[in-house]
Length: 400
Image 1 (cartoon, rainbow, N blue to C red):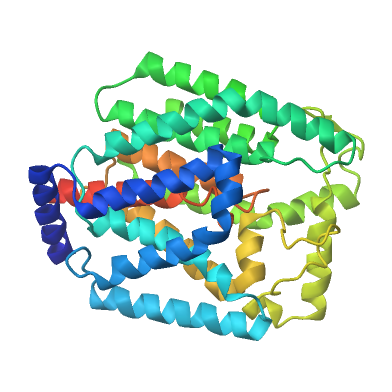
Image 2: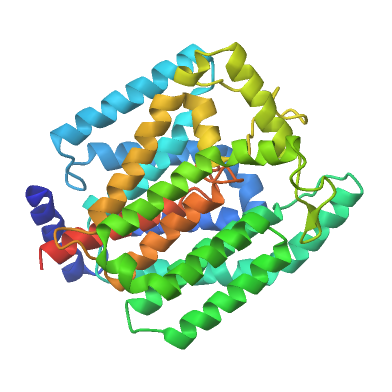
């Protein structure tokens, strides 16, 4: 860590002298491309088919250019072993190799933030990008939602974004906007206004998971910010509990459905409590009982779970499990928790900017209860960006 810390400090100093390094400019470009696909549907329709190739190309540049990034040998060996395991699993369960991109993309983002040449102004610049995304998403939340639900009532497909995607973008970008504000001053009233507007916009989308996740993350941050910032153990325990509940959530949901603990016609925010996910999860469980080896290597691209012929199990934890099996899921989540631990640094505390990064991670873990946010390329970037900034800030603090 010390060697890497000195390397990062040298790169920060170099980036400061020249304004923005080539890697920093590249980072802004790829973030802008990804974010444009999130808020502008024609960009999504045009670029999504090529985005995986862009991601892989950038990842290769990040790894091979030693003037940009220096990865410790132990970490390099771990990466090779992880991707070897993931690839072996894909060969066994006959999934497509394209699913590896959902690991390549966040790791490339994470490593670019931790090891690359970035100026001290990078956080504010990224926050400005997120502000634009937040404003556009808030503005379009009502129109997209109205169209989507009107078409759904007529059993018509909407040519545009699912309101759940818009809600995820609003919730996640809100905290990045706050991050830019906290890097300049302590925005108490501004933070509250930002939260209220975001909450109202998410409510308009009628995305219940994102609304609840955002409310829990925002309120817990307002009430327990000092405790989260000063206690590594408490913060890691909360993240771990969210993960454990998230993996068990489908079981509890199915139990409530089967035992009639909630009325089948119960509605929340104009939508049924039981949306059909229970059938996906029950189908998946029946498959696992008949194919116990799938616990190790996943189910592969199995469209039999979902009645409309899609491989989407509507739970981020189960999606990774289905694609790669239990060992890969455990490694994946362990890495996330290790990054959260690393954010605390040697002194075991978080700055305001790092705490906002931590909030984005908690939000992502919570949304994963009913959305495949770890696998969906459009919204995949928010968590890795937050982890990257948080870890980089820890190293910067240790070397100043």
